[in-house]
Image 1 (cartoon, rainbow, N blue to C red):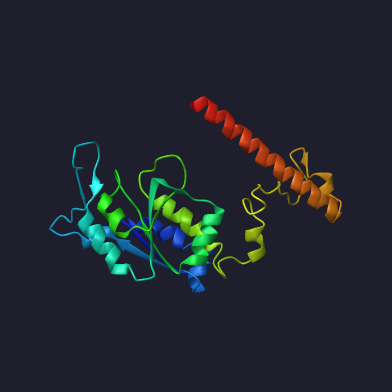
Image 2: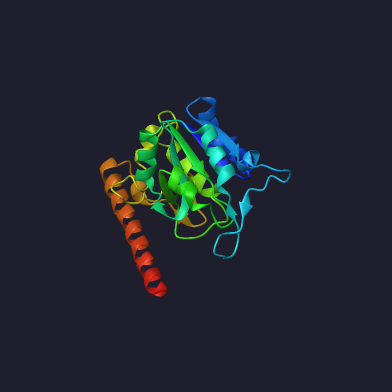
Length: 230
């Protein structure tokens, strides 16, 4: 899988690309990441990439000309172009899996300031994605979230493929049960007896109940927060 990330600050991604799972995937040639600096495509002495919005309003927007050239420098016929915005489809595990299995080249556009000119979205963007109902200063963090979440579903992206489909949100829509490792007792808290029993049937039942309880607690909390917002 190849991912082209278009941003004003490509150096932001360097550390992540040189770390852990993503670094190993790049070394194994399972993943190729291309960083594209929008400012490289701006004209003039000062390489201006932003301007004030028509109609007034706070902040600045990324200009369409340099962003268009940046996209066209990497776009192929089969490329899938994604822009991160609060109004996009909410990213979830099934979406990550779908992206990984459907596209071998994704272009991720990272907005900055107040966003990008709508004409770029109209002309180039295949879909808009959101990672949550909050506002960030740019699309760089969402790009990393999508890259990390999607890589898990790429063949060879993780060491243990089975662990991906046993993770939270892939267990019938539930959370994983709590996990424990040695020592058996830590600061007065002991590992549940059932996990020490060696009875795999009982352990499976306990994990299923615990996972459902976690999901129930989250749903209750989200409901309470929604009521407060109203």
